[in-house]
Image (tube, rainbow, N blue to C red):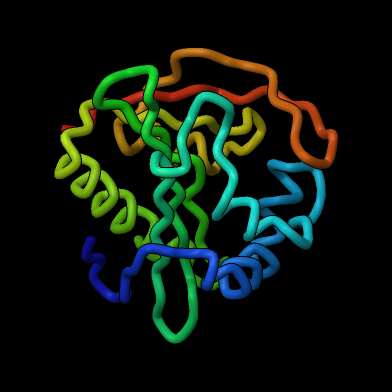
Amino acid sequence: MNVDGFRVARLTVDDASELQDIFERAADFFELCEGGPPRADAALTELTHVPEGFAFDDLVLFGFWRERLEGVVQLLRDPRKEATWWIGLLLLDPAARNGGAGTRIFEATREWLASCAAQTIYIGVVVHNEFARRFWLARGFREIDVQKYTTTHGFTTDVVVMRRAVQ
C-alpha cells in the first residue's frame, strides 16, 4: 500500500506502544465513540482481538507514519460473506486531520482491498459521530442498517452500518 506523504507498513504487536500513543492523542474519538478514554490495553486488543467466528488471519492493520505514527486502518475479512471486508477503524492523529490524509488513506485502502479481490466494504459508524458519517457518505458508502452497540466502557449507542462496492 502506498499513500503520498506517509510511510506505510503493517502493524504487529511490536507496534503496540506506538499504536497506544496515537490512541491517547486521539482520545476525542474514544470519548465520542466508546464513552471514555482509550483503555490502557486498547492497542494490544486492537492488534490481537477478532470477533467470534473470525480468524486472526482475517485481521489486517496498517500504520501511516510521518515522523511518528499518525494514522491507522484496521481491516477485517468477513469469512461469512465472500469477497467482503470491514473497516473496523480509520483513525488519524488530530494534527493530521482535515488535510486530505483520511481520503488518501481510504483510497489506498480501497485499492489494496481490490488487489485482495474484495468486492464489498462495510463500516459501522457511531450514530452521533456526524463528522464520520459525512466522511463515509462522501466516499460512496450508503447507510443500510442501524444496530445497538455496547463498548468496553459499557456505553451503549447506535451504530449505522454502511456499505459500498470496492470499485
